[in-house]
Length: 426
Image 1 (cartoon, rainbow, N blue to C red):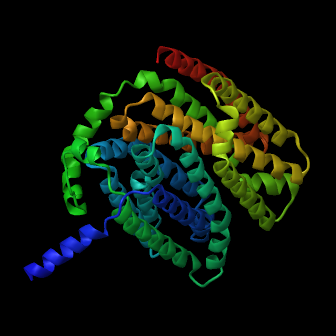
Image 2 (image 1 turned 90 degrees about the vertical axis):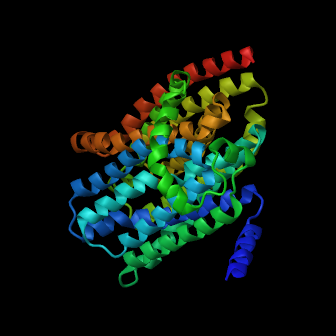
């Protein structure tokens, strides 16, 4: 028996492969693919169960709220205990939640599951931090762009497949089981191919931590993680976080109730709305794949970087204005694709600027905080847009997006000036 155990242990160690960035692409695709299959049909499922619009909104808010609170903690734990361990733990919880979502009809249990998902589903933040640990700063822009491209591809094909599942008997349950299996695949990939670099293992002082040990160690490390957050010099990052917030508020103000906006303004079918979302996903994919070329074209020198970053924010503001004024659905879809393209560029640059300012040991905490900032916008935007659209009509959400985007221009100028000062000091 002991010999069998030894052979099994050696086999498990031999299965561990060296890191390759392609595996982070696969994890990104599977994660977003699972979400894109599930999310478009989730609200309809709740409505079919008799849920009110207030409850559906509360489900979205509690998810974003839990992500807001848990993001920095999960990131800080990954700094201490290792990215791979925390990623596997979060994937396991996520897979279980989606499975139970498919067998329950209780509103309270659904609310609990969404809160749990919000607390632990930080797959993309951890995935990007793993990339930052393994990939040089010079190559990170291209990698992050490809990750965004993969997200766009996932959101292009996912809703269509989800629609086929929905036509089956108990279709939503099948979708939940399918999504759960997708995250199981990600667990396997993470275990085999995303081992932390040696320096991370030394920093955490925990070698070969398995999942059960990780679960037992979380309570005592939670306080230490919070102390680690307190030790970060947050004031030097406030301008980047503010820019992330107003940019996310602008985009979420446009995206919130998107199907209602398009159907009421242009009297098109739900099928046409789905095609427009697919085109936006395609645009996001093109933007991500083009990041290497865009980076060479626009950011050859630091001065180019500072100048063009603000110009993109100005251009995006004009796109929001065009979306508000257009009376043709074809132009609305076209402008939406352009907006998605440049929004992806801005997201990549925000992440890059954050990593440029922070030491490697604090990347997880800061990425977690960045996720929390984005989730504040995701939590506030639906409430504000809902009130505005009840009072002033469906186009008022785009008006709010214009206001937020104008604020983003001025914040971008502040960020760029700070980056220029840092470059001179270096």
